[in-house]
Length: 314
Image (cartoon, rainbow, N blue to C red):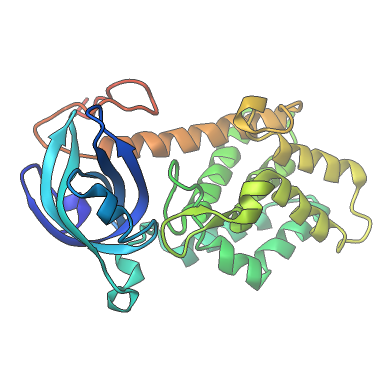
């Protein structure tokens, strides 16, 4: 069975992808393995208590393993209690069974984004966006990348879906603020996370590249914009500066990794709408995890620091 189909009490005999693995020490001094498994329907935590030292050397993070065990209820969430585990050769694996992908069609989403580009009136911003979205190498990475390692839109195609949703939000909100520069708001939304095509790796479990860990997607994105701007004759310096400010400030706060805080209305709107889209996706993910049809409440959410209601409010 897929992870999403597992219920309390089910016996498990599955091949799963190891997203994370840690050797911990219990209160009684005994070692145990804490593991997070994934497939293309979700993820689940697991514990292995017996012979933890031996099993710890038998496989590593990003390996495929066959496990036998039982699904138990641990503090209101599903967890696998492992009895047996062994590494599975990659030759027996179809990677598409283990990586989650956007439910939306990739080409449809790209087509919608390009329609938004066509609505840009500023000729310099239009040229810049076309340079990115007509770059086959960039699009090949962009349409498959996740938007994050584990939080919001953490699935293949997630970066494209998040970008399209944010652009659509900016398009809808812009009509309430006729004094803003709509073109730079839309362009900022389209380009705010482009650095993630080089920040994240996603051939197996999602993680950070060396470039992502050392530099980060914000700085990478600004460098990518600089490279494309140099290809456009007479691109206004002030426009480049304002656009880069959108990228540099879109995390909103220094403690969130933002080099700058929003100092224009367009950058402020981008920050709040980006945060809204990310938090809504995380909330929906939390509602669907460990779903029990007889329970109107989720387990305690560490991200939101509360229990979430998922009953019918109509």
